[in-house]
Image (cartoon, rainbow, N blue to C red; front, side, top):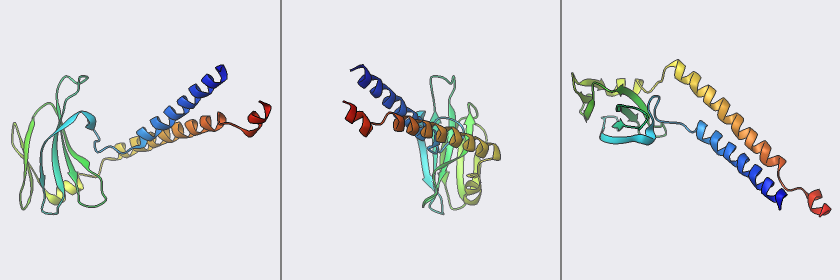
Amino acid sequence: MRQLLLLAAWALVGTLLIASGVYLVMPSRNLHGDPRVEQELASCVLQDDAEVRLYQGDSAAAKASWFSVTHDPKGLLPERQIIYQFRSPALYDLVCDSVGVIIRTDTAPITLSADQAFRLRDWPAEARDRDVKRWAVGGALVLMGLGLLWLVRPRREDELRE
């Protein structure tokens, strides 16, 4: 019975390692902020059929809100953060017109053409470096979990001994 509990515990640890590794390599729409605690405030569709969304983030850990604007083109490209604003000026609304998107703020509005919004999808080099590290750590966790599960798998010779 003790061996069975030990086997189950190690199998659980291996499964958790794999799940953690997969979670790390899952792409996020945000470079800054946490999409899990963001609430969509507004959205509109640009002339090129890309959807622009405004989110407000608020978590217990952060003392103030943040605002995130994302660009989601039609097709296979994922939704990506194009503007991030912590605290002020607050972003209230966005409106799409024939030229691009106008983001209303406490101060002067932010105006982006559809082409500018698409170009802002390219994250800076330091973000790509962070992605490589995240993939390396996530891959290592998955490999460790798979190795652990492979070690604790039932074997034919174990059945023959009993």
